[in-house]
Amino acid sequence: MQINYNHLYYFWVTANEGGISRAAQKLNLAPQTVSAQIAALEERLDRPLFIKRGRSLELTEFGALTKSYADDMFAKAQEWLHTVASGEKHVTTMCRVGVTDGLPKTLASKWLSPALTGEQHVKLGIQDGNLDELIGQLALHKLDMILTDLPLIADVDLPLYCQHIGHSEIGFFASHSDGDIDELIANFPYCLDQAQVVMPGQNSSLTRSLMQWFDVNKIAPDITVYATDIALMKSLGRDGFGIFPAPLMIKEEIMGKFNVSYIGKAENISQEYQLITPQGSIVHPLVSNIVKIAAGINRAD
Image 1: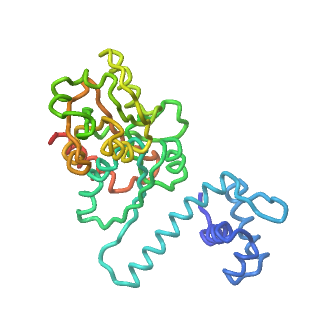
Image 2: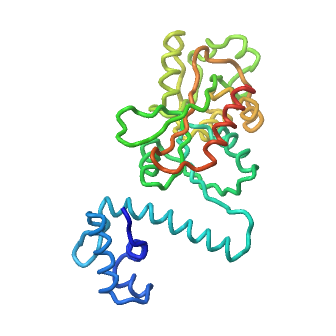
């Protein structure tokens, strides 16, 4: 299917300006001309892009999807024009990454930082949130990829590609306010029984796994906080709210940053990490770099 990209541009300006009159002023065209161009695009696509709400226009679901693609297209066009005007030899691209709440940001940084030191000129836009929200953003092409500690639910009715990029064993960390560190280490894991513990959010897969592990080992911790924000969980652990679990892949970083001690490993418990990208569209070149970096980190650990 071929379309007139001028028609798409007029639609995009109208969507951004919030109406045909304001778009016509910006484009220096008659409102009738803009309206006719959008109607021609709708006829070509055989779907409505706007619906009328009183005297206002509102994007249809298809219109919102079309706008998200147009946002990318015209942003790329502006990047290209800037490159031409400035005489730059390298094109800087934007990579928009979603990171789920339960994924340690230190780990995300480990994967992303080396990717920025290569030959590619990349700017990162990072958004955190729950997986459902981020998948919605990915579906609208407002993200290029998602880094997550959660499995992709089988009944998600979207064309997505999920790659396993690593895993980490889970350990527990304590501050000196939690008790004598040597004694905690010597009595692990039973030192956790009745001890104050800070856990990830109640709906996280890691919390579910650890609760089963507690049951198997007949341990009943006193859970003081469920923290969806993993960085907050570690900060609370550092500040005396309780012992907390975290991936051993970033053990040294946790001990150094939060001034806590590693007291023991949760046997047979691990956290899996996935990278999710949309199928059927161009994948950002940074994706392959992250997969290679993650594989290298896993081998090193």
